[in-house]
Amino acid sequence: MIVVAALQLRGAVPSTPLELITGATTLTKGVLIILAVLSLLSWAIMFALWRELARAQRTSLKFFRDFERASRLEEAGALAKVTAPNALTRLFMRAAHFVSDTRVRNQQARERDAGESTVRAPATLTGSQVETLHLLLETDASAERDRLGRFLPWLATIGSVSPLIGLLGTVLGVIDAFIGIATHGSGNLSAVAPGVAEALIATAAALVVAIPATFGFNIFAGRINRFDGMMESFGTATIALLVREGQI
Image 1 (cartoon, helix red, strand yellow):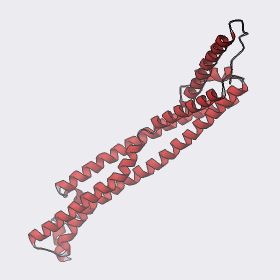
Image 2 (tube, helix red, strand yellow):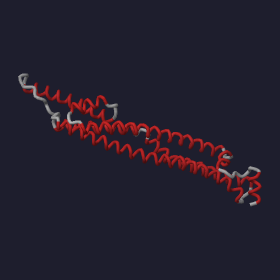
Image 3 (tube, one colour):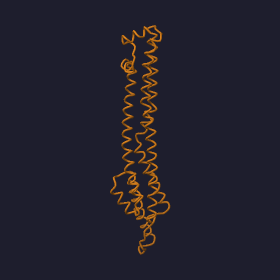
Image 4 (tube, helix red, strand yellow):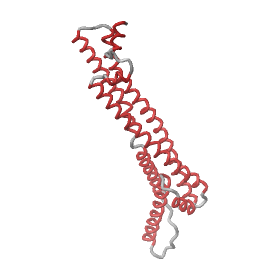
């Protein structure tokens, strides 16, 4: 203990995490710099995801509530035009355009088959065309979900790779510590502890990076799944309104 105290007084033995970092080897500092960059990247991604998801959910949920109160298709269309663009308004406009174009093509096909003297009655969609509309809305909803979650793989990668980077820094630091012990011929605890503590700093820093990234990935993945469920429900409600209006 007297030897350790004397070394601490001379500054040879680090006594705080900050001293461990400042007195670390170049290799350990390099690992810590990489982890710091990954930490900043993960927090930037989480902030961007939080802001974009909050805006998308707020505008889409407001439009969905107003859409459910609409009794006529024209009212829903007017509402979609005055509402701030969001995932649900895009789904509604895609469905409306698809139904309109398909009805025109169906009417033209009926006129060609029956002759020009046929009365121009509204041509409804066939069962296969309704299924196509449903698949089209699912595809658009999937594309919207992928757009919102385009940065989620980065969070998953940071959360899984950071501990491995920290472990690599720890292993290399321990190897360096034991090489130093063998070189100087000292194997007592006061000689081993500083090198091992310095090596473990890399693991601790890696956990500080990985834990928030993993939490963020799970939280935002859950929010995106709930938003995807809302888009699916809206697609069903849109088709139901079109059926009720006699459009399909």
